Length: 548
Ligand code: GAP
Image 1 (cartoon, helix red, strand yellow):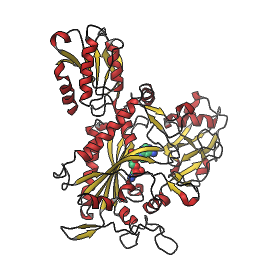
Image 2 (tube, helix red, strand yellow):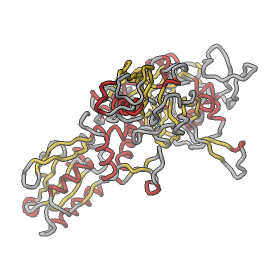
Image 3 (tube, rainbow, N blue to C red):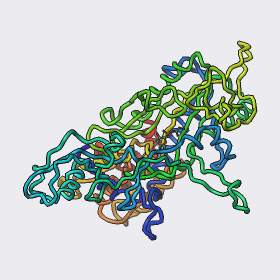
Image 4 (cartoon, rainbow, N blue to C red):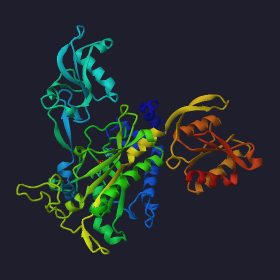
């Protein structure tokens, strides 16, 4: 991964139409991104692979490997703006916040746990501002090791050549590890004096909006910060309108919105993003087994689509990391190239949510089963937010057992998955040019299921009937529903490289021999192997290769 420079991936993304800054001609808009012609296909393929593998290809009569029993899977699409009471009962209204700090000097706002820093002193004689008092020097640079040194040079007034005169006390940590007594000794990013950070404060991440023409506070609603709640509030509707029996899963893909304090790292932390979530409803007694099943299955999904072992890990959360609703969570994490070596970023969380959500959306009644951390109480000890009053329990007509189902939630980010597949696919290697000489090439080695374009069709030259024959092949592939392109511009080697850069797995060339032998050359993006395939069999051959 060391050679996969994030800057190169970002620049390729723009150059070849994967990702653009939102509203770029107006200077962009932080935390918002647009997908270009290649990016939209890549992301659609990620979402379609997920939907197919989790829903449409699911066989409800056979237990998949590792599953305790067979089960049902169905989908829904729910609204982005919901009754505000949903967010009060889900806990988001009271608890969905990050801690933030402001810098009084620069007026910048940071997430408390995202500012990195190191304690340092410097008593060297050439320093303009020597200090034997320990200062916590902070940085928001993408490479925090380098960033903190650069910041310390500024703080102590030292020339770069004297960097080794700074004495460091411990390694990099984050600002939220400091005690309130230590915070005044922290030097904020882009500032050279300590003491400009404010005390940390809560910041709710939900975007507020107004529904209706009156525009009063009573009309305030929220853009959903997760798709999950749309599934919980439809639990009864799904049970009553389909044949599902517990255990079963309900899936949804859709946009979510969070007013992130510091959106960063390309699309990794955006303010508008898409989630692919499953709420899996099961009996409380088997919920641990289902938790292990979904954790392992979701990890395997990323591997099957090409994320390699070394870059992908499964990490169980410590007790103090758990979200307000969760009694157990494991994250699937990826070594994104923008992270320091050895660090991983979350792709998906698989959470054991217990019965918290369904119980909260009922009455929010308190009894010994309720989790006191999650149910908000008013001054009289009653639930602060009133539930729907609807019965969201489940009656098993075989066992005559009535219970509130437990929920296992595999919750993935479509944009993060797309970014991980893009980073993993990015390679620079060598391939022969038109003269047979090896030249450096940039290639995106996407899994064929994810590749935006499945094949490119080229006539070797623009005459002798080759364009006509190539267009026939192109149309045949299109009619089979494959996303293919046709190109007759430029030398053949150049056309290959253009396709390598967008990750097209196969290039099909119609040449001088096609008219006589009725065959074309199919070139493989990764092995560079070229084989002759009869024209009549090209579409079937590409379909066969796509199936793997
Ligand atoms: N319903 C549970 C839930 O929303 P989460 O861990 O907050 O859990 C699930 O979010 C996934 O959504 C994350 O693993 C990540 O892939 C994606 N995600 C969350 N916040 C995001 C953001 N600001 N930008 C991009 N993706 C995000």
